[in-house]
Image (cartoon, rainbow, N blue to C red; front, side):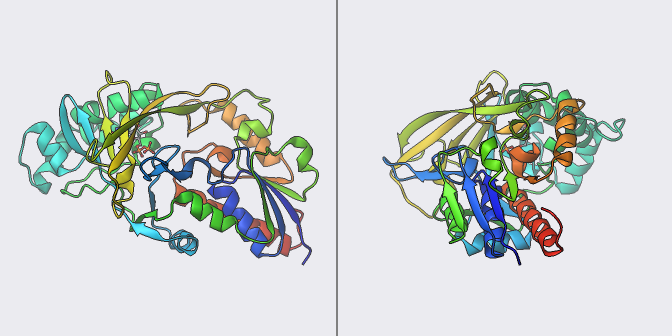
Amino acid sequence: MTTKRFGIAGAGFSGAVIARELAEAGHEVTVFETRDHVAGNCHTERDPETSVMIHRYGPHIFHTGNERVWEYVNRFGTMMPYNHRVRTTVGGRVYLLPVNLLTINQLFETALNPAEARAFIAEQADSTIGEPRNFEEQALKFMGRRLYEAFFLGYTTKQWGLPPTEIPAAVLRRLPLRFSYEDSYFNHPHQAIPRDGYTSIVQQILDHPRIEVLLSTGYGVADRGQFDHSIWTGPLDAWFDYRFGRLGYRTLDFEEIRDTGDHIGCAVMNYGDVEVPYTRIAEHKHFAPWEEHEGTVCFRETSRLAGEGDIPYYPIRLANDKSVLGQYLDAARAEAGVTFVGRLGTYRYLDMDVTIGEALTAADGILDAIGSGAAV
Ligand code: UDP
């Protein structure tokens, strides 16, 4: 086999996983990372004052039903069992999320059993909607106006800066609606948080003699020529030097709150009222319930449109407008010598397990192509 040289832009999960797979297959890999740390937006570090593990770019909870991905992350760190639960404050009251039987009974001041609640919500739901064209139609079809307005309209408007009629229906489909008292946020069989943080896992993935990691170093156009193939996990539009215009992102601002003991009493409290400017508060010590800390650190999260220089978090895919994105996707398909992967590289709202799964698949594809003698 001929050894190939790969240049990878980005040391988040996508870049790290592909780097590892290629290196294990005998290829030489250089990873360029503009930040001074690996792990991208999953980066974690201990707060020097309290020693709480901080999810620097907002909470990340690992959950998956993909056995290959689950085995993969377990190779590189100790995953601690963790059950994510979220509460929401709306109209001066606290409710459980995702919407479940307790949420329904509290909001409607009823004591319905599962079958009664199912029938009751079916009555509330708008049966005139066929295939939902956007977030609002999806919500009205599945839960009716009252639940939608209480828990989703305000939060979604703040989170996306747009009316929910412009948000894709798929965003709401991330969340379940349950007719039991189960309040675990995710349905997946595996749910965990790495004991030593995500950054440690990504460092372990990258720890291979054929992988070189360059921190605080961008992957410039001039660098591309040194390699047989590039893997781009940065923003899709940046690779093409924004030739069709900029793709929109939401960015987040975090306001730190320090306290002792327990500040909000749970990992995440959402704020559904549109009058409250922030979307949620996360108390990071609750993401590591196996640890004990006297002090506590919380972050109040506010979402806004990303300007130049802001960190891109959520790609804004409008329900009815994909024209600029379409141009970039066509250009990406036509571009030789590069593979686009990950949340930024494919401009999709991806969970960590999907990101890792897609990176493994991308690496398989590249290795198959090399094995069959095709140009990569
Ligand atoms: N959402 C909402 N109210 C909530 C929580 C979520 O309206 O209290 C909507 C919102 O549009 C959000 C989407 O559901 O973007 C997906 O929620 P998730 O918790 O998956 O968002 P993430 O934690 O990824 O930001």
